[in-house]
Image (cartoon, rainbow, N blue to C red; front, side):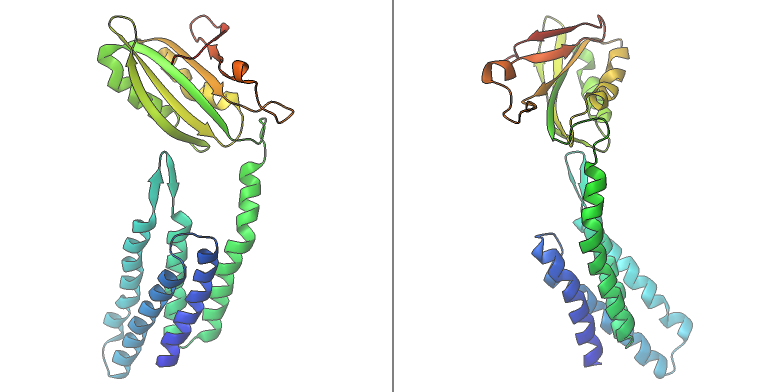
Length: 260
């Protein structure tokens, strides 16, 4: 029995080493504890079965282990702005439970294969996934900051703020801030700053175009902030301080200095 628990701890520790090395959540100790905790549960089932207990009742324990790790997995999933992080960590914890359960039953070969599969998936598939995410689709492969604002009537401020958050709630966008300020009498300017994984103005144009259809909105504009030039040196200071606005109601573009 000690061998079973030690094997589960060791296999899961190998999984956790890869996470610890990459400074991710649920590293060496977390994975080892998860597997070391699931192995005794499975051993308990085996011992009770040998003592003559009903198989139907004891087999439920495996399902309860899966349910229990689901709560732990939910705890490592967090939201960062509009991005969700921790899904891979939660999935890895779930895999560690399976490895621990296999080790608990004495299936060391299968537990080892499971460990190799999990670590291999992290090491081999991560670069492939990043390459697919960063493959340019009509835009430059550079993270870009955007600023856009909408002028609306004061009573509709909360509604427009919600629409702005909803407009950028899609993959590739990371909302940094949303704020409001007084405009002319009876109107409010709702502004937002966000970052995209690559330079693609059409993404932002699509995201905010719905705002122009709102009766309470009188103007919508957006601009790129500090986007580097083709030579890699970036815009000069005086040029970077200007925004290029897109007015949905006139269809014209105009330049202007940002409000301080």
